[in-house]
Length: 158
Image (tube, rainbow, N blue to C red; front, top):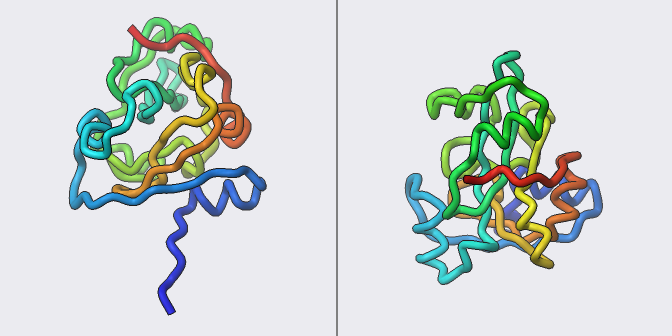
């Protein structure tokens, strides 16, 4: 019997009784979200990436934004009450989140960091995020995602 495909993020959503669906795709190594959306014929507006930053205070913060947009560090800093933010270096992603680049999702990181979802997510019944592993996507309501990560919405893009 084949082993059921479950990531840590999926197990957390199941435990919280949050509805989601998932999709798998073939991918051996990191490619950015824009290329994945193109490859799977998905809308950039509904496809979200996860960015992790470190604040002047040394705290980590998670930002979820459309794959084709860039984070505005000033707006993002303001949204979490930090003086300034820097992007987390790629080599530190696994150590801080427990995930690897390309498979990072805001759900089920090593710790529950303060999480901000770009306000455009509220325009959709369902958005697409990483499932916690390269090659897995989750389809989830933005409000359910917000609840799962104890997050909030804000304008955090350039």
